Length: 167
Image 1 (tube, rainbow, N blue to C red):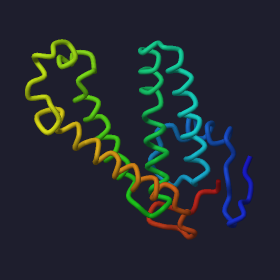
Image 2: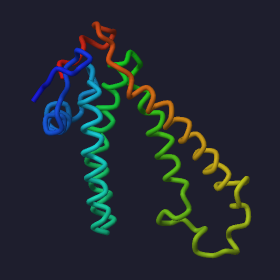
Image 3: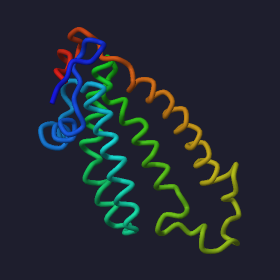
């Protein structure tokens, strides 16, 4: 269902957003996504992630994240384009997050949690832990920047990425 918002633009409801992002635009990086399309889908993703993580089955959570990484990235890509920014910018926080996950010592295969003697050189300020601390700061800065960008109103006219979204 589409509704006219108080600002004059169209607004997509929760169910339509999920349907659009998971079926019609699953891997579509072309065009634009309205704030309602993007944020309703993000809310659905977060609710699903919480439910799946509460089940306590790590592999199920991993499957959930992997199944939704493409439509979530595509929706963010289109949302950035709706604000007049290049969609590929969404890959920056995704890349930083993936790099952080790969470097996290508690990940399977991480040796730091096994033997305290092996932690030399892994203290904050040096080695892998220093890089993780730096990446954490970068992620906080990116979070603030991307929240700002992704909450901006749609460009009202046709931009380089197409006409304004209908919902």
